[in-house]
Length: 142
Image (cartoon, helix red, strand yellow):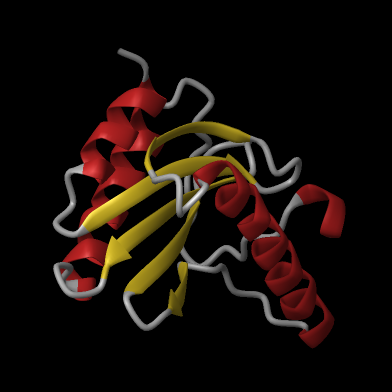
């Protein structure tokens, strides 16, 4: 089982998880996913959120903010959509986790996804050493 599959399986087991994907936000390509339904097309939602990430990074750059995005939270009436940037690799990836709001504990889900991200980064062959306090901006936006 590869690193992506292992990470997706772990994220799919977060309490209240309805769908999860790992997405390349530069291209919008989904590298893998779990869950979803006919009413919730993860193949549309996951790449669509690439635009959210790219737009937020552009706004941060225009504002001169030299910080990294930890995660982006979108709350709906019945769902939480959690976007977590995967830091420490050369790739421009994020986790996209959809939670059933009635079943999920948002604080625990954020913590669990952070741990999964750290494990993903540590087991990634192209993992770059993380430097605390270093801003995270994609190469094409510098």
